[in-house]
Length: 186
Ligand code: AMP
Image (cartoon, rainbow, N blue to C red):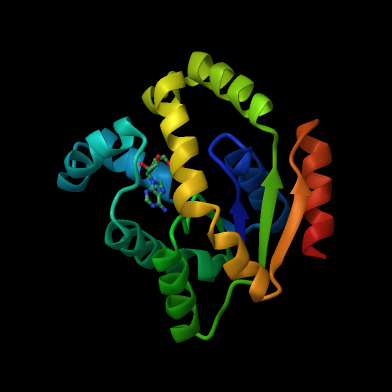
């Protein structure tokens, strides 16, 4: 089973992806985590994308598609992928469909976590203090949210048209949200 966790930054995708991994033994594929690992390792790719992440903008489709392509086999071996923070553009969504199709696979469900904007801002302030992620500062977060609304939210009709989209209330205790996600996957 391949699942996309969809929603704006700080909607809880990463937290819920990790819980899905615990319950189902699938592999979380987070392009944000992969890019941060490249930056931390000081690789050429990391150097190339550092300023883009710091500004809250999207890196090129080609970069993230390459990262997903490289990591997909280990997800397949585990029985499926939980895509977290990917795809973020229509070109990425189309490339993902093509990539999975060429491997005899597909996206089964797209779970959209719905969270109100005030809650998002509160979450991001907490995460900024707890984890110190530079792109969680209020100004950059505003940019990331704008990028989400302009470039990523338009993917919702793409998945709705495929009959794969499920909307889940992303507010409240983490375990309650996890239970709603399970229902959406059933
Ligand atoms: P995230 O941890 O998913 O919020 O991603 C952090 C940052 O990594 C984003 O603000 C982008 O700069 C970059 N990034 C992560 N995933 C993608 C993607 N699918 N396409 C383009 N940029 C991405």
